[in-house]
Image (tube, rainbow, N blue to C red; front, top):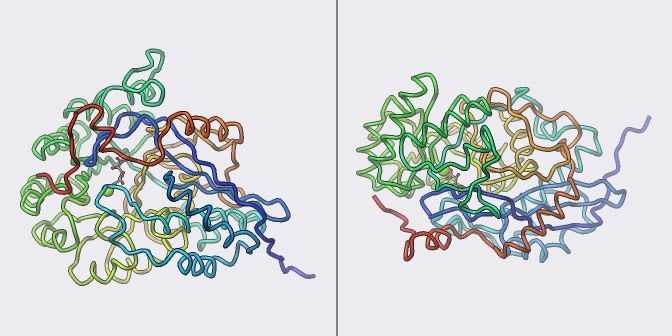
Length: 435
Ligand code: GKR
Ligand code: MG
């Protein structure tokens, strides 16, 4: 019996920018626009197997995908290493510094490669009949746990409703439209989100108000949820070293980790030495190039990987080995996203050897979906690993068309939270260190 599977060739690549409804969430860099941008990539083989992926939307990443088209078409989806090498030769090596100062990663090549890699793994899964988790080493757990991700926010549903709210909405759909600008608002948001999704850990996005106010919100969450619900706060590196140590000490014993209190590996290491609380990052150690510096100074305890900018799912598995070697834990970072990204995160989360912390996800903030099975279900804050071949999700072509039209209509081409904030607070400026 000949069991050898012949890998097909990629015949077509379809890149579709979409815009998804996003409420007015606040962060260190400003305000979320009424729509978050995502790009959906579909690769189709010469025998009509289709693989999909989702990455943060940005017109220049989309242009790079188009420029890379000739390197993708005609290739076998199993040739991921050589595709990666050719992309790097073509675009030139990207440096860690190109990430930028914003809470989100601004590099192009890592996103391009991640888009290609995830879609190829989806294809390979479909050819072999295996879910992506099996291509990453196999399932270490059946369900992947996520944390409630709280945001300070203005009143509003986002999308075409902007700062208005849908009076017909109920439960979490209603709660996510309500303003949350103080500890009471944050506790209300947390209760509604946890009731709807069953989350068992809570993260507060900070860097919006002065640290005393944000620390008060953490204490209010502790009062409301008790000591058995792990809490975290993420000021996105806006605090000085002194501020981080001052407020870090106040929250010692209350939070399970402090995420990116301050900017840069050196500053993180000083804060880390001063606190007993572990430090996590998705800002100072965000690429393999950053690992030597991280190890040299001891920048963090937990690396929040993100397959969209660590160069894909397999790279994130490699990162997990490095983390184990150098005494780091690995967990996961997110940005506004839909179900294709969530599926990839769940496959990765299920394959990682160790998963000591509940992963981040923005999914509760989104109401749109682009996969045909509809919105993912969370039980006790966890998502069951899809068992169908590949990612286990299929594109809903009608939804894709609608969300693409939304992209064309909204006129946004890249994320710019500072400009959105200036529409509310004229003259507002992003400062990379504020308190
Ligand atoms: O969605 O506003 C946001 C977050 O601030 C996001 O952009 C960050 O990248 O969630 C992220 C984080 O943990 O820093
Ligand atoms: Mg973060």
